Image 1 (cartoon, rainbow, N blue to C red):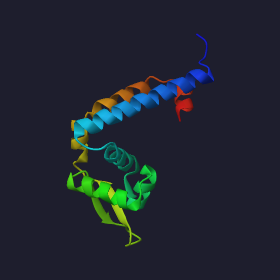
Image 2: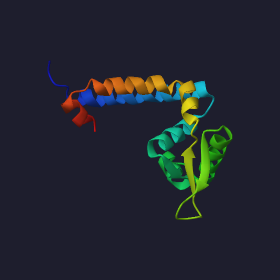
Image 3: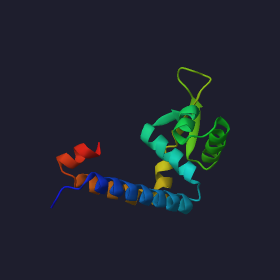
Image 4: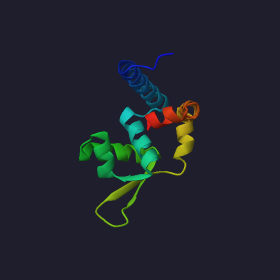
Length: 131
């Protein structure tokens, strides 16, 4: 079998992006949250903790919009605000310890299992190309 062309890779990545967008919309809808809310949860899961400014920068939100988003996530029990250890002017956001259980209700666990399965099937060259 011939190696995929650059165009094949581009098309596959584009298709993946479109399917990821559909998955995000479905997960957010199933959880009764907005897509930006879900994106914020994913960023916090990946980073561990972020300041509100860092989260806003990642989501391309204004300061007011990120405050509203964080207020919503805090009320819903997803995140908690804390003091920054070095700069008291900053607020640090972390996922609540029980947020993992809520994520399971969204169906994220099955998605993450499938990603882990796919990653495990890659050979060394495929893993190197992916990262």
